[in-house]
Image (cartoon, rainbow, N blue to C red):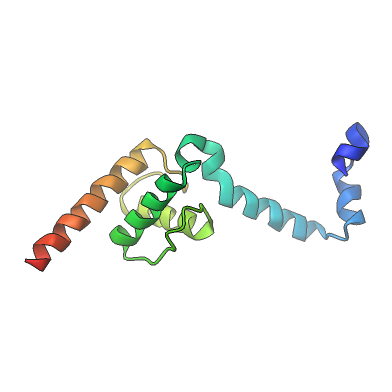
Length: 120
């Protein structure tokens, strides 16, 4: 619609034409920004599925959670990263910035060392 109408495009008209309620649109926008806020804030980190898998795996080990390790940055990964950030005194924004990633790596290593010591 936006492409076809160009500068005459109206979001209000489009939502009405599509049969969307304002509350539905607001929920969609909020979820989109929540799910992809980290990607917008730090594209290099989250554009690599292997790095997302590391974050998911490290969160599972560190927090004892059961996030699916699939390389997809979704709402569960975001929520658990916020939990991690809160637990370790970081800015709880759900964005894996360098300080968060460094602490995640550190906590992941400590967790692995503890499990090795326990196994002995």
